[in-house]
Length: 97
Image (cartoon, rainbow, N blue to C red; front, side):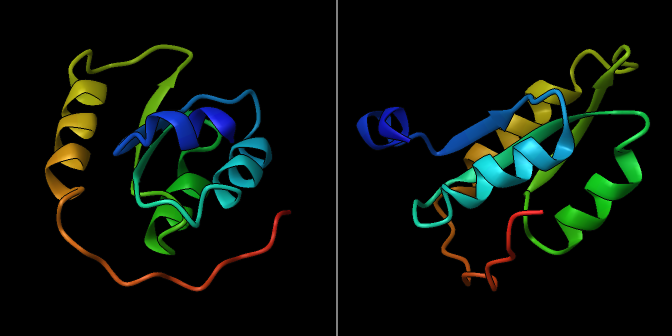
């Protein structure tokens, strides 16, 4: 978390081996203003979609085993950066799985 405090990024891309690890890490950053894009596998895409609907993450990119759209991650980060200046309501904080 110290890196986050030092650099204060507006957009964070999460790439974890397991979805529950990404959720726990993301929960620790809730007090900082940022947008989050999560990389996920084809097996996790439906669960990540639901988490995005619940505002735990802002966007996701199907990235493993391979990306079908090489520009998708760049576009997700671009959009998140564009939206970072727009204030948003703070969603209720879920607990770590």
